[in-house]
Image (tube, rainbow, N blue to C red; front, side, top):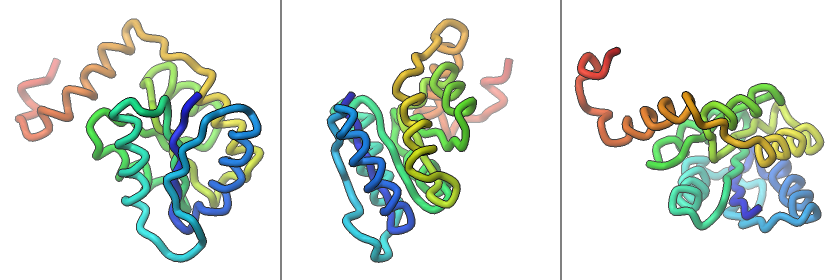
Amino acid sequence: MKVAIGADHAGYALKEELRARLIERGHEVIDLGTRGPDSTDYPDYAAAVGRRVAEGSVDRGILVCSTGVGMSMAANKIPGVRAALAFNADEVRLTRAHNDANVLALGARYQNAESGLELIDIFFDTPFDGGRHQRRVDKITALEVTAGEDPEENQP
């Protein structure tokens, strides 16, 4: 799988471990930074990874910051990105199967290389279920162009 990976300073060490392990497992990894532990701004890396995913030049994206929250928030501003913050296997499996997530955000405070790699494997191996879930993903996609419209018009 071709994957873009990015992290801010708080996620740098974990990103480096995950990157190396993904390469060992035969994945093509595009490392979009950061390149060291000096303070950086997480939205820069979320945007870089998100854009690669949205344009289709990579299959999936991985983002790491202190909690994963900021990265997921920033990445989700890129049209076409469905970034999910997850902490356990069940969350990762469901966000792929039900939401067709294409970016996984991890919190370096809560994951180590082993647990992070386990979650990434699940993220890569779990297919999207489609079916009734496709309708919901389509509604998420529609929000990218209708975000300013009156929500009352779209109520069931």
